[in-house]
Length: 372
Image (cartoon, rainbow, N blue to C red; front, side, top):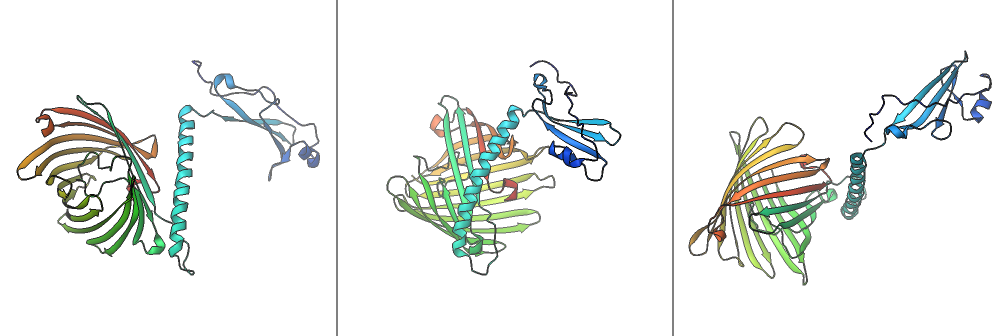
């Protein structure tokens, strides 16, 4: 294992032919063939008894090409193949598994989309995507917590891109800074989203589906978005209204103000408030975030500070939070690693200093994040 690999690996045995050069048929019968455009006969001797092995140095002799010129000279070309490393084998296995899952997912989307296809319409490819996110949080004085979020969007081109099918476990109306916006208790939701309005500045969509866990819980949501650009700044207003049959009504209002910079860095201010019939009052969030691209492929550093409050008759500060997230492609282009050290001062701990760290992975199917 510790021996240094040689630059060249020579196989000791060479194969040659005694057949006359003017008898290509006889040579061909022995596995020899004439090289087009050259006055020589060549043979490729596969690994076996005809060539020596060099496994002791970690190099595999795959093939030996032997050429006999018209002057009777012999030229041997050794073809070497390095055995795949553990990382290469792992990468190949991961890519193969993802490719199979992605092919099945896209095939389901195409079959559903074919329902809306006109007889004279040309074939079209879907832009269906799916994302799975797994996060582990280690917090001072608490046991480790694990959260898993997933969302899948099946685009239907033959429905004029106005209709999408979805499967997810994301709670409607969660604040954008919610650390775990999932439904919990192994619930998930299926349904469809229809765009009533799609213009340069405004979007209006209607969503309906069923929350599945025990007795099905139907739900619906209406979302309106309006965007305005001014002197390099981008303002975006989002208003959601939603209703779960069991949990009742709720709403989320959100205002984002963004400023992109020439080096692709981004500053964003987010102000949000939500209310649900199950909550004890109105919840507020104010977040300032800076996304800084780092040298290398798809590497970012995200700096964020947030304050959270609640109004249930009296106004209370719920949490003060600051974190730094390092986000990078890990091993494969569709696998993203996130590391987030964080400090916060939550009211439930009497505003004591509480450090924590989150480590997680994000897996993409279909198009990659930069394609969206």
